[in-house]
Image (cartoon, rainbow, N blue to C red; front, side):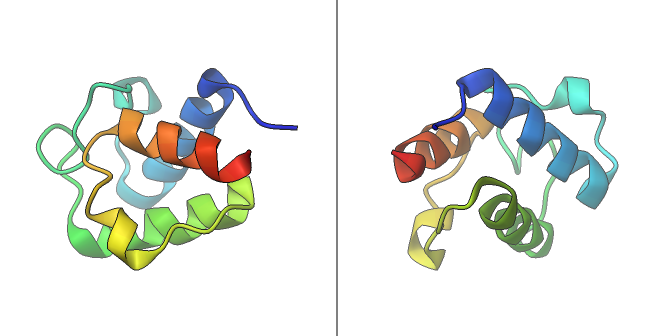
Length: 82
């Protein structure tokens, strides 16, 4: 069963919070990982690995660069679950 946008958002917010200390309330779909949340490429890779484990999806390395915003990641994860 695929998760809703809100469930994925909550999961991503937890992962980002654990990795970077960013408040979960700051992790919103329109936020850019790099510009708004100040996440560097190393932290992003950790977030991706944790998201793959949490959501049971595969996020190829060449796709990570396309995940600019939290919303991009939500969309990708939702499609990968389908």
